[in-house]
Length: 216
Ligand SMILES: [Fe+2]
Image 1 (cartoon, rainbow, N blue to C red):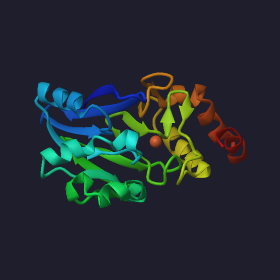
Image 2: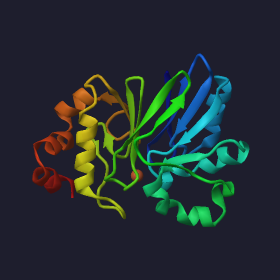
Image 3: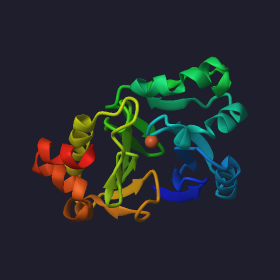
């Protein structure tokens, strides 16, 4: 599996193109800004877009989904069911082309190329935040950044759930490569390095009271 990290838009967001070289099938994770730049990359690599995946439904991760949905009748927007409340205005305004959303429960394995993408429900930043794991990589959205974790003071946020989600991610192999939703302190890291140096990962492991004091 190959990964292209694209830093796009005014908020240091990352969009990702993930693809299986043998089949030229691609998934785009968090299409939010400059869809033309994402599309250009897909065309250059001759990739067929199969999945449009959201780590969560905040606009700075979802803004450009409509661009791709309008171009491909087969494509659906995939996100966790508990984040649909963040899209209600857009759906009722007819955005997303009136297409049904493909809703996740949070424990699915999506058949992708010759492998699969595992969905890990990682609520806390939003109730429907998920991380996507595949081939030794994990796309953590706004749950885990290099050296930080996501905000837990927004509508639908839950700091206790965020701690549990960080513990869930900490249980992945230390060698797992992290691909975060924003370029806050760096572009990428590993679970092992974050367990050692990320203060929020460390406090999450220490206990709930310790984590909540720092995260809220
Ligand atoms: Fe967010």
